[in-house]
Image 1 (cartoon, rainbow, N blue to C red):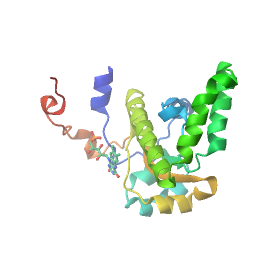
Image 2 (tube, helix red, strand yellow):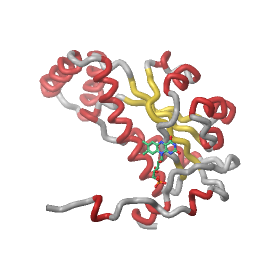
Image 3 (cartoon, rainbow, N blue to C red):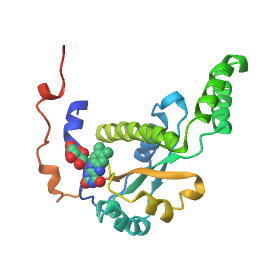
Image 4 (cartoon, helix red, strand yellow):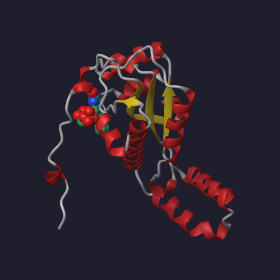
Length: 209
Ligand SMILES: Cc1cc2nc3c(=O)[nH]c(=O)nc-3n(C[C@H](O)[C@H](O)[C@H](O)COP(=O)(O)O)c2cc1C
């Protein structure tokens, strides 16, 4: 399939086959894709939990507006925001850059000082919202890669983040759940697979001056 065929073949899966699991190689592609997603300043203020535990997944269904695909998917991806983006976090990023690229400290210093000062002036809410924007980019990136790799998925905003944080003990890790995405293989009888895509006519969606 070319990329447009793959994107037309993908859809928001409503029913997964609970007996099918993604092979390790596909999961690795998912993990690498997440980590390769570009982020603002390269700071990667996000973390992804890969949950393959049917019992725990089923426990999360009531906190996901009873969407059964959470319990049936091969794996549940939970996209989390890293809450503490402080001086130490920013310093660590630049230490990594220096180690990977061999950049001298005096070269990174002006930008590092700017970021430390800039983030130091932001509220927690501003930092969280900034991290949330990065998470949506990761989600989009992953959806496209899933389509290309013939991995079925459903992006999900319909869940209660505070309950996920409690059940998965994400607070203890300094994380807050933002989005989730069950992935796996569509059930043969998922009627949504047969529905035509509903999209605006292209000329109403894209314009040229
Ligand atoms: C950010 C985001 C959140 C979504 N949340 C849900 C959800 O909670 N439950 C659901 O069934 N579908 C959810 N969807 C799927 C959309 O309804 C679906 O992508 C859209 O109707 C287009 O259909 P298609 O993806 O099958 O082409 C979500 C999609 C996005 C991008």
